[in-house]
Image 1 (tube, one colour):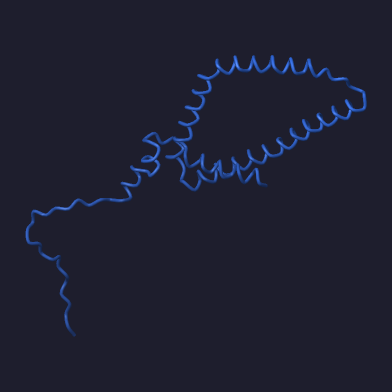
Image 2: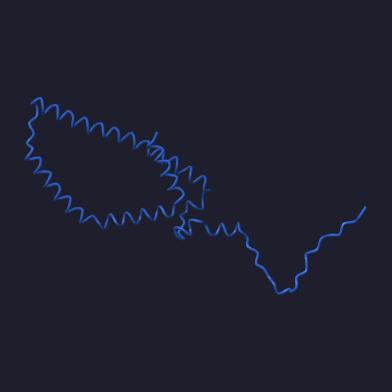
Length: 156
């Protein structure tokens, strides 16, 4: 029976060569992929829960919101459409007389007021958009799960 000799590390030509050992798990913990895409401000949710948990939480809340949005939207559309239908039937039957010139005048007046208010509200809207963008950047995984769930909720 032949005896085995323990393997020894091959000798290098010089001992000056030194290599740095890179621990990829530690690197991955410190450098998330979304940090490179969306900046260093990863939100608190990112550090508390796993990615799968975040996607599930976002997906479930998104599905609930989408489902409710769909149901409320259908109800609102039915109410508005039914109201217009009843108004037209009443108008054609002679129960209601509509002064269309007055309606046109009121609509034009409302348009002018909306234009004035829209110019004043622009900074508030910009601030809201910036805050929303920052929130989405900080919680990108939950936000993407929410969007997916919302679309599924609308479809169901």
